[in-house]
Structure formats: structure tokens, C-alpha cells
Length: 301
Length: 279
Image (cartoon, rainbow over all chains, first blue to last red; front, top):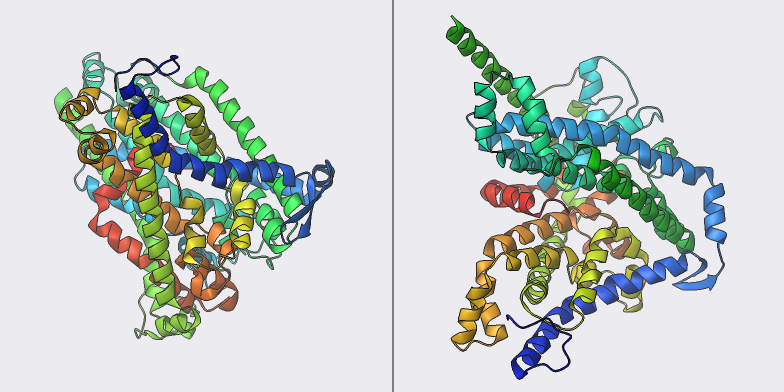
């Protein structure tokens, strides 16, 4: 167990045994990952340069799928929809989650109850949750229009459908993000606040000079995670807006387009190109985040 | 003078905090409440303007109708089995691999671990077409095996449990070794039991994720009898476009098992997710 690093020319009998155990114990996971992920990744990459002939047969095409893709208005619309979805949901969602976390971190009774309530959507399948919201958003009989006295076509009007989806997304994720942020808040030592109190710093000053910098590493993790999840949004939009909905193109995300091309239209080569593009986009956004974090994330404790 | 004004402002802060929390909770709970209320209304009542809040007459007809359209018993069974197998596989294989990566020295360790890290960074959709083609080639579409397939191993679980094993001091394993345990025994008898809170967290994470997953079950199991609760529910959309009481009854039935589990194990659920957070 405390052997020198492997790679030495001759291993003792015990070290050899340990090595064999090591290989044996990682074998199921590694074999599984190679079969289920590494090889499929290579196949997807290859398929993105191919035409799908049906039944899993492909013919090499070159960059054809990509040129088709970059010329397709539907594709660019889906890319924009994905980015727009992130813009609508991520900042608002994280702001509200932070607010909830701060409220839950205060000295209140029934903290556990409130936390459980905010967390509830997390344990419900998005398919079921979206169904309820479709009913709330229903233009004719939905409770939202009834209460506001409006007749907005939340789910079929191409101008507002994305907002409806964003509301559901924020509502669903708020408790999860708040729980993560709360654990970050709880790690802040009380002594900082006590010192600030003695210096006569107000609550607002305390928030900007203690809370925010101290919670920034957690905030960064939540931001990265939320952005990644939002870039590959699919289930919520799929449940909200079906193929026949006239507003589909105004709300269709990249992963929704990917699903329709790959599994409805069976254009798996083209579908593969879309998913490769999405991964590329997620990569860029993540790199930007990691570069940007140096400006605002505080790792000094 | 100063003290009383400070006490006053403290009171205001507390009141505002409670008000905000209660308001927020209402917004969170309302959709669930509305679902329950609608599911026991008749269709004409659900379309009444202005809407009624409580059903004039409670009906269970919507539940029987949705159970005629969807084989709910099969859906529950398929979902439960999918979750069970995914959890068992994730916990068993990830524990083994996590232990080995954390505590054992072997050639190629870093290279193999980089495969784990790479998988974690990729969105699952990038694997989905080839995975589907494999299942189709095996003739295994429309089966429980197909539902479990992408979850046979868990890169995230491996990474997460490796962290847990790294947190256990080496001396504990060495003591077991001196007592005559071999690597396998010291893993199963001494080390594995020490990771129980992490294993619980991974269980919750795996179960909640598998339960909510929609694209994979839709793609791989098209036979209604082999669907999960999520994918089965998706088929209702087209069938009952305006019959919301039936749709609400279906959603309620689909949600119920996990919500009941959640009510009993709230702490484990929330802590589990907080621990696995960052994925």
C-alpha cells in the first residue's frame, strides 16, 4: 500500500500482487467506459463525416454534414435558442438560488421544511413537472392567464414560448442550486461577521465584502454546472413543445434538433455533427468561464 | 435609543425573511397543489371560467382513464428495475475502481483515470447514437437491459468514490493488511463500510438521474409496455391534448413513488445531492 511508485523495473511480490488487484478492480469500469463511451465517441466523431444509409450503415462523406449544418437556418436558430435559453435562465436562476440560500442561512425556524420545499422539483421527473406547467400556461383555461386576466398563448406563441420554458427551468433548478450554495455559505466562519459587526459594518457591506467573496468558489461551481446543463437542455423543451407546435423552431434547442434529426428523421450523420458542435460550444463556454473566474473567484481563505 | 432601533431593524429583517421564504414556498408548492386539485376534477369543471379552486365533486375517473391509456404497473416495474440495476452497478463497480484508483499502485493508473475524467466532461448525448446502435445490434431494444445499458458503469461514481477513499487514512488499510487481509478483504471488510455516506449519496444521485432521464428511454424502448414513467408520460401529450385532468392524474401517478421516498428520506436526498454537487 505504501509502495514506491510503479514503473520501477522490478516489483516485489507484494507490489506485483497489489498491481494485479488494481487492474482487476478497475477492469469492469474501464472496460465499460471503453465500450460505452470511448468507442461511441469515436464512432460519433466518424459518423459526423458520414451519411447514414439506414440500419446503422454509414458512407464516408467528408465535411458535407458540417457545410449543410452551417448553411441551415434551422441549425443557427437552434444554436441561438440554446444560447438564449442560457441567457434567460442562468443569471436569474443563480441570483434567485443565492437569495434562497441566504434566506435559508438566516436564523429562521422551520429551515428544514423550507429547504425541502424548494428542493422538491429536483426529485420529480422533468416530464411530469413540465406537464403541470403546460396546464398552468394553457392559453384558454390555464390558471396563469385567468389570474392575470390575459390571453397569452404561452406555449404556442413563438415570442413568449421561450420565456415559459425559462420559467419552468428556473423554478425546477432553484432548490438544487440553493442547496449547493447553502453549503458554501455555511462554510463561512462566523468570526468574520463578528469582526465586521464590531467595525460597525452594515449588513449590505458585510454581504459584498464577506459573503460574496467567500461564497464565490461555490458560486463558480454552480455557474459552470448550470451552464453546462442549460447548453444541453432537451427534456423540458421536448415536453413543453411537441413536433406539431407552430412555435417549435422558436424554442428548439440544439439537443432537441439533435434528437429529431437522429431518431425521428434518422439522419444520424447530420445528428452526430450537431452533437459534436454542441460539445464544441460547451467547451468554449467552459474555457471562457475558467479564464473569467480569475477576475471574480476568491480562493483565499 | 440605539439598541431599540437595532432591535427594531432586526425584527424587520426577520419578518422580511419569513415573508420571502413563505412566498417562495407558495410558488414552489402551487404547481403540485394545482396538479392534485385538477386531477380530481371533471373535464368540464377544469375548463370552467372563472376556475374553481377545489373540485365541486371529487372524481377518480381521471386516474382510471389514464391507467387505461398507460400500463402504469409495467411503467413502475420498469422504472424500479432500471433504477435498481443502475444503482447496484454504479455502487459495485465504482467502489472497486474508486478504491483501486485511490489506494493501489498499478501501471497505467493515470492513463486509465484520465478516461474516467474525459467521460465526465462529455455530455451523455454524444454517446447516444452508437449506444443505441449497439443495443439494436444485440437485439436488446425494448428490454430492461436496454434501459440499464448506458448506466452499467459510472465515471462520475468512480471519481466521486475515489474522493471518499482518498479521505480514509492509509493506516487503516495497512492495519487490516497486517491482520492478514488481502487487498480484496481489506476493501470489502474494512474500507467499503467506511464510505457508506458517499455510497448513499451516489445512490440518490444515480436514482434521481435515472428516474428523470427522458431521451435514452424514448430512443431505446418504443414499446409502451417497456417504457419508463418519464417516457410513458411523454406519449400522453399527443393523446390528451386538452384533457388536463387526465394528464394531471398521469403526472401525479408518475411523480408519486419518488416524492414518497423523498418525504421519508429528505435529509439523505438533500445531503446526497449536496455532496455530489458539481456534476
